[in-house]
Length: 224
Length: 167
Image 1 (cartoon, chains in turn green, blue):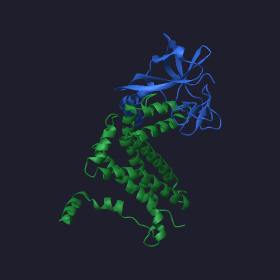
Image 2 (cartoon, each protein chain N blue to C red; image 1 turned 120 degrees about the horizontal axis):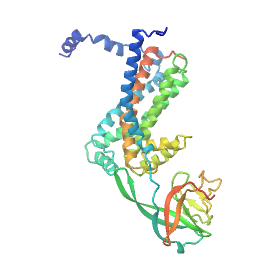
Image 3 (cartoon, rainbow over the protein chains, first blue to last red; image 1 turned 90 degrees about the horizontal axis):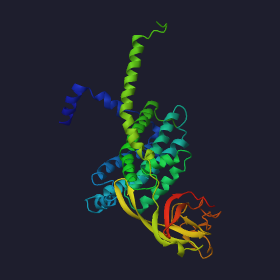
Image 4 (tube, chains in turn yellow, cyan; image 1 turned 60 degrees about the horizontal axis):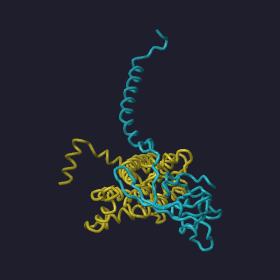
């Protein structure tokens, strides 16, 4: 049945070369943990992506209940966690996954560094990787404020003070992030929400695409 | 007629780039201005807030003056309570912000028994002299901020917070 459906579509759109192009590629022996168990270190990049997908999905579902307003944000998080079925699980996935993404990126970076995989011709992919790391840290920072509890508020106060310490443009960065020159409040929360949910994920997807196109183009770096 | 004749291809290239640029700018300009509005908004110099602490009750020992005011945060208006450390320096009034310059905790006067003439921050043991000067070797990197302060009908009135001017 499925085969017939596939053939029907393929006959008309010739989709086989498209997915072959994406899915058919060689996995060299030295990166395959089935051959050398120590090759598991090559899995950290894929694991980072896997957890990122979980973050995107769980985040999409969290916005079904979450409200980025200072009077309702905490209440909505409390409600979705304690009243909604599996709320603790979905929020837990997003909460723990956020930390795990950073850990996995760190391990992935260490692997790339110690196998020398950043060297010519892969310098550009290292640079995109560093930008991805920055975007993930930005997502971590903006997401931390959203539950709007005391920890979130004061962590963001400190974070914004750090941003304000940038020479010359620090004050402008601060106001741009906080939405007000003195208050960390209603406008800060909506801005962080917009950055967390739209701006940074858009940048993340673009950079990820570049990261993956480059790794496919250049292949996996050779054995040590 | 100039010697550098513009070819049909060049002309179309310039025209399309110009029109495309104009359309892109027309889309982006409103959005960018929208996003940076908080930076460009004019803030009227804050009014002085009258506290219920009489100037006559003040001495050279800093006392905590609590006050409340209506804070307008975009669409959200709320009653905010805050405080200042106020004392007399000769005839002059001095009002210091209680916000620690290390990580923003609240400092107290003479809270550390070992340093009865200093401000003390309980979070990381930051200390300040009476005039707000941070004590070297403690975490804060700068002096306590200062309120604009004046006497109104015998009571203390507090204005905007500014960088310390007396140390």
